[in-house]
Image (cartoon, rainbow, N blue to C red; front, side, top):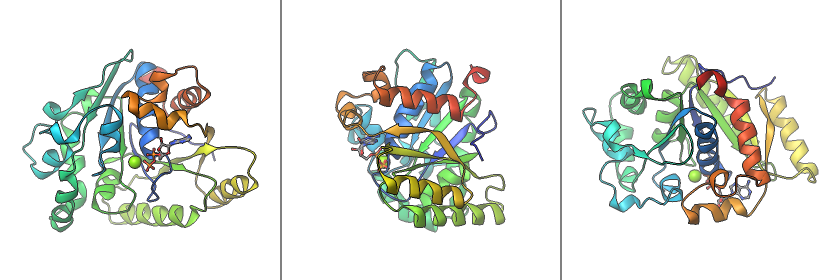
Length: 266
Ligand code: ADP
Ligand code: MG
């Protein structure tokens, strides 16, 4: 099975309930790569830790309109909460997060129809964008469920040195429930992407083989391990924009080609 993310997969939840596997890095770099290839892209920060927002040089505490306000008030204007990230790309915007999202989370978990708040909020702006990438927290709580309910597909970064397959099985089961209960009948995992990869590890090959055995499509692109990824956020931009010729930046541009029909979207 190879990933097939065509135009109908334009909203991707980048998710894995394990922390530190490269979700936020993938959203930032893949988003920039897609925008630079000509797509209009919206990034959505659904993590109360605000890593994506911070990595673009924004200070969450100074933002009054964020995912929290948009989810808390169905009448809130999402478009006015969105920040333009600039750069050479067609259009790259961010719906930022603030730490208030963490305060909202338990209230949202009690709300009626709690799964669909993000989907409803995004509805009004979808015509503006060809690709929406949603960054998620490292759990399968109500914020991640909102991302999955809003998405056409899940893109799963997986750090192959660890044993993350239990997590992948749990994610598959959650997606199955969202389908069965008609929260998102068409949702599926569109691809697992190996991050922080190095072919030298036998374990890596075993893990990727096991992921295939779970029936989950693997992306052909592997993101190499490099400390440059961790250095980029301090510069307020992802590696794709900071060092575009770096092998890690090139890998994310290949992933952009792989997961989206950019030429069709441009
Ligand atoms: P998550 O969002 O899943 O918690 P992050 O994207 O924040 O993961 O990545 C965790 C840490 O690993 C960060 O410090 C990040 O800069 C770093 N990192 C991400 N991708 C890579 C990579 N390919 N190689 C090396 N370090 C990486
Ligand atoms: Mg993160």
